[in-house]
Image 1 (tube, rainbow, N blue to C red):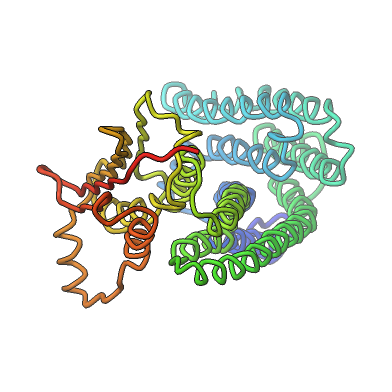
Image 2 (cartoon, rainbow, N blue to C red):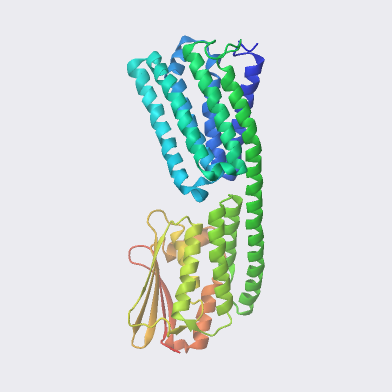
Length: 441
């Protein structure tokens, strides 16, 4: 039975590898974790190699002569990327990680070199290259893997075991394929038997390792969700404060939705950065909503933080620029808290996010005749086009934030001394001009 490479024993292992390939690929599509992406690509290379003897036609045999060894080099290149991702060497062992990355790239190059060798010199010459090259490369890889302290971790030890076992079995198979069935080990088995056994042992080892990795992912995700819950509690408090001050807090809920999307996509680092910025924004808004006025410097810090959050939500699809005249003392000048926010939000949500191509938000602040003039300019779809789209889609949402800012400006300054003008730019986009008296502490 073991002499027939198409017997039930070999078929079961092929089927198992194929199911593992599908499982980890689907898992990658769901969680977007690189470790599963690299492992599924590696298993694809292994599966292609395992089914080579299932084809009997002359044309398929010739195809495999061209691809068989190159596919293995490509597969092992992704195997190294899988190991790097599993052991997180980029974070914990950066020096070794760079070396491993170089080896992975070298294996890719060698895979293509073997195709060239096959084309110019034929399959027999390619086999001679492999009989000397494969064992040497395997020894170098094992030495480099065991050289660093990464192997003293549980994942490192099992990873080393799986690598060594498969490399030994793979080299035995390659040598026997080239030198004959009974060379080196005289057993009545097919030359591929050793490779099948190596894959069986290795995939079993990694089944346990990846189960642990999945558990760690779930733990990290739970921590993010706990942080999200805490921020939701803070958001509720902010909402109550905002309502008491007649402030519209819907832009904060949009930020919360963006955090939730990162969590659902399992983008841990992005979610962590987003939560930190969002927490800072919540804290600053809570600190300012009870105040009658704040410094322009603080207002700009809050606005820039909000813009950064929206940039992350929109995948950095727009640029921004803030210009303040040099003669304005941003620390001394007092302004209405959050007077910029609703106009910046409108520019992003109703102007830039609906436009294709280059997008930019510009804030200009200047002084003239003891008045402060603020311009919020975007090159989005324009004020009139935005209104038309709202009307066509029957959107009845009222700009409470803008109305509130107008009311607060009239409350703090005389109605004759301030104004807010919203107009379309001459070419494209919207321009908001806000005027109010200059006041310092």
